[in-house]
Amino acid sequence: MGKQKKPPTPKKNCIFCGKTGVTKEHLWPDWLKNYIPIDSSSHTHTTQMSRLNYNTGMVRESPIIKIQSGNLMAQKLRIVCDICNNEWMSRLQESAKPLLIPFIKGEWLDLNLHERGIVSAWLTMYTMVYEFKHPPTIVASFEDRNLFRERVLPPYNWFFWIGLNDGLWDKAHHKGLGLVDQLSKEIPEKCNIQSTTIALNKLILHVVGGPRVVLIGSELERYNNSIKLQRFWPPINTGFWGTRIKTLDKPNHIFTPGDCAAVGHALESFFA
Image: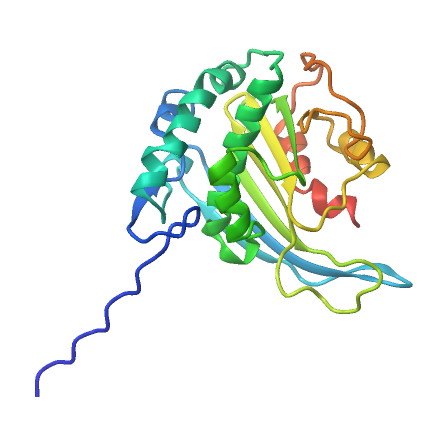
């Protein structure tokens, strides 16, 4: 009796458009290699599920931590199709590149509204892809990703910050949390809010987003003050998002590795 054939491997679908035919692509674009040290050390994923108790506040479950070491530029994922990768994603990379490079080199730009939209869309794209390095941390739904593909604008409940660092913190940190309101007694089945913090040489970027909107009004301002970065998106005062952002003033404070690490853990600290 001959050997039984292995069942065919199920075809993967593109996380943005849903079509089959995904290819293995680098997590980071090639152009960054000219500005990022080749020996960038590690990136960290943390999943933490939690619930909010009536009397005691937050009750934390033990976090699931996944640390992956190695050159960030070498990381690959097989989750995006050729069409998405070579069309709208490629166009977004080309639009973001001249805006990101000065910050990466330690220079500062006062981005206009259109430019802020491009940088925040670039970070949205990166975050939506990077979540798949550790699936328990996935917050964006397929509907979120597909709408982002069509509009190339961040989801309305995502917030973005920017700053400069001393270039010594070469990490990417992604954290997923499961939060519920005070009327619920069950721990959520999956993460519903995430934060992603990345350092690209002298640039530090931070994003918080997900369907569990918790940073509104005074809470948003309190979070701003806790991380000491400049929020650059969403930039318009609707009465819901908080104070209108007029300019991006060059920061007086250059972040140290300790500062950057604190930003990476800021979301869980905020709800502690």
